[in-house]
Image (cartoon, rainbow over all chains, first blue to last red; front, top):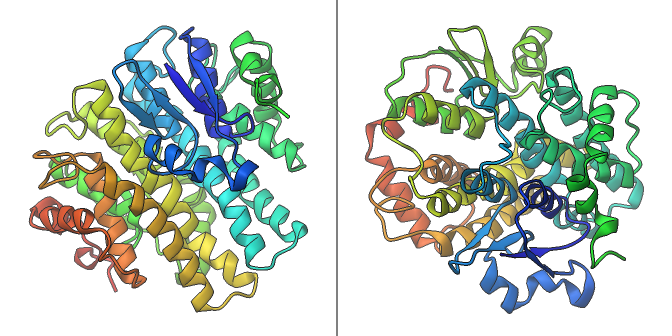
Amino acid sequence: MKLYTYFRSSAAYRVRIALNLKEVPYNAVSVHLTKDGGQHRKPDYQAVNPQMRVPALELSTGDTLIQSLAIIEYLDEVFPDPALLPTDAIERAHVRAVAQIIACDIHPTNNLVALNYLRKLGHDDKTVNEWYASWVVSGFEAIETMLRPGPYAFGSHVTLADLCLVPQVFNARRFKVPLERFPKIVAVDAACAKLPAFDKARPENQFDSE
Amino acid sequence: MKLYTYFRSSAAYRVRIALNLKEVPYNAVSVHLTKDGGQHRKPDYQAVNPQMRVPALELSTGDTLIQSLAIIEYLDEVFPDPALLPTDAIERAHVRAVAQIIACDIHPTNNLVALNYLRKLGHDDKTVNEWYASWVVSGFEAIETMLRPGPYAFGSHVTLADLCLVPQVFNARRFKVPLERFPKIVAVDAACAKLPAFDKARPENQFDSE
């Protein structure tokens, strides 16, 4: 498999964790989001992913999958061990909801494209950082009430929720969002950090890290 | 089942279509997003959904599910007929990707909370509408290349992709985003509009419509 990735992309980070947990070998191809005016905007990458974002996962069949949660659900269906979703339908829905609060309601308002748009509208770093923090805080407030006794987000097994939480916590720290109000989230992040699959997926451990 | 909904919420609209397609009876409870300073922000609704957004689906077990895609995947698992995802894993990933381009990358940047934030930053309707349109256009550009021969987004069966596309097209029209460049998307929307399950879910056909 070939993973189009960028060390700092939190969506790519989620998929890297999934691939590591399932011990699926892959070749990483770096798509630099700022160099050369954004390598993701070049026609050769648009041919890979019409949305011109990372990640994208090219399968041995020649098919290319996009959107991190769709990719992870695919990996979970095809490589079921270890499972990233519980078996009970209601529990699956709770895990997916936490993942989607991050992937839908926090991250897209905070990705590079959205932040650059705000800068283009004339806003300074302070305003952009406040915007960033507001989405993290409102999403994390909900998630903090939804987590179960640990060590992971939904108990003793790593789930899709952890795969989304850890990269979002990484990003929140990068933007200096205070996390004291979210002790459960911080504890989940710390528990995951001890697992080699998460550690190997960290931005600073990628070959294209700067 | 009890669905907390708002006629104009496109996330609630997706779930209404799913419930109708699967012929699952439900009681609709209106959560008005602008009246009384936003009924979703009241403590009694926060007790239902800690994220204070619609939709939320209360089950007969007493469990409450949130996040529209998590709710729809739950409904698809528990009421499998008609299936909203193909059986092939790669095809499922493609359907989910289209759904997520809308639910993650278009809609959250365009929902009421985000648009109100921009207004709070001092932006006028013109700037807010341009912001709105930019996310619809970039997302629809990708989706237009991903759709299959119709009548629906992925062929002869309605999928999760259609459930997300139709409400987003409704919203795009409401904000007067030109759709001439997206003939496939417009055709899918027209095909879905002929189905009673979609028609019954339209904002103007809700009991809380204004």
